[in-house]
Image (spheres, rainbow, N blue to C red):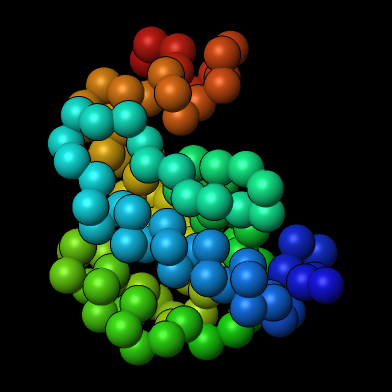
Length: 117
């Protein structure tokens, strides 16, 4: 079992890592203005933003191919861990939603971040 959700970091199982790596691939293929892509997790699809959450505190080292893929998308990492990549990809996903006005799908109804300044 993965202990990455505990908030203290740790190791993620291979199946969890694979879901996040699939999310990176899906982000790379995401066309402007299209709905947020999903990836399969256990028995159901989840948005790629949720895939970031499952490795949010994971201190495992990200494979170099994934680091290169994120770099190709203009996403720079401050560390080469799943956690750092999750945070950077999550920020890029939010930016994509705001840029294409699809943010309602990302933020739950009533989220205070949607309030006008």
